[in-house]
Image 1 (cartoon, protein in one colour):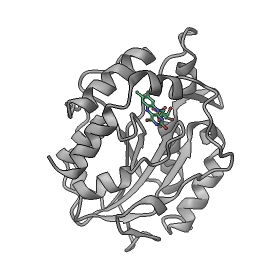
Image 2: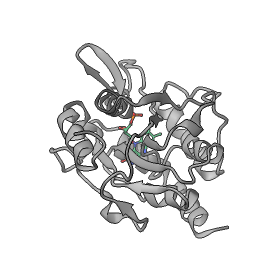
Image 3: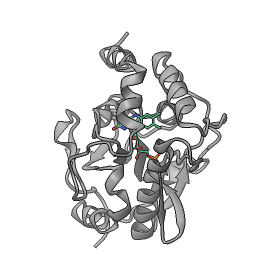
Length: 236
Ligand SMILES: Cc1cc2nc3c(=O)[nH]c(=O)nc-3n(C[C@H](O)[C@H](O)[C@H](O)COP(=O)(O)O)c2cc1C
């Protein structure tokens, strides 16, 4: 077992009730109110400040799991946003802003077997997948992946790491020579080392400084996301 695998298994054994207490509560403490709350300073991976090259073909690939507001579980309303009457998951909303600003193609990474739409069942299934290192089959297939040179990769933090579907995603595509720009939403635990995890899986990719934000701030993040896109030189 590699160090990363051991780390993943250890993280997965953090007690279930603790995570429920931490993340099922809409009043979770995030201690940030102003946009990009954590950069890539906590990563060991070499991260570029700006996107190298010109004339990019941009893909925005993201995983997002907005849960229906069933009026029972407070957590469900925390994982979906309503902006101008449209309902989004946090990461889905970030992807929409990035897509509008860059003109990149957007694709939502979906599993072949949909996740439960009940928070507790979803949390339990996600935890089981972590513990057993399950890489769930995807329904999403990107036939023209080779056409893209810059890939924004978006995901929520689940159980202190990426959802396991993201591991399947990185299994399935060759990122050698491509530029990866991560973006993420979380309930308080920031990047949780996920950029390092991706860098370990994709050692031949170039990484550019990403964007991570608490779900509590996503609905008001559009201007900050556009500022970040300017900083990394992907838009003017
Ligand atoms: C199964 C599950 C596990 C989660 N685990 C964490 C976690 O470990 N750390 C954290 O900060 N947030 C955690 N969250 C909160 C999500 O990262 C947060 O709500 C995120 O904004 C969801 O994005 P989405 O609406 O695009 O799916 C978890 C949420 C779910 C559903």
